[in-house]
Amino acid sequence: MQETTLSELRNQTRHFFDLIEAGETIRVLRNGKPIADIMPVQKDVPSWKRRQAQPLLVNGVEISRLILEDRGC
Image (tube, rainbow, N blue to C red; front, top):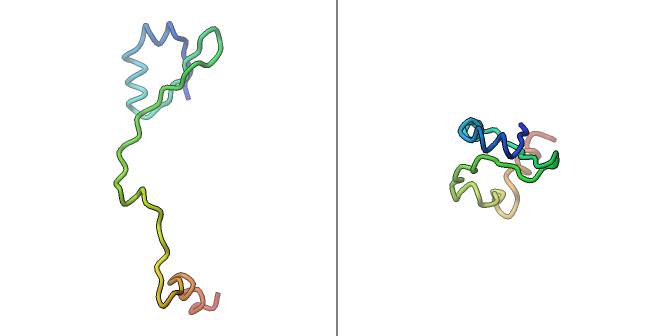
């Protein structure tokens, strides 16, 4: 994470926003103290990735458990 002062951010806005667009997070300092973190916007995540995965079941038993038992683990 890069750090910059508020006045440096103001004077070099394009440079810092190019870094942010490239994936960097910029911490802004005022009087030596952090006041903000500017980070890239998260890309849209498809709805199927937002749902919590549910285990696959066969006759009420998780398939992963059946595989492990079959392998003798």
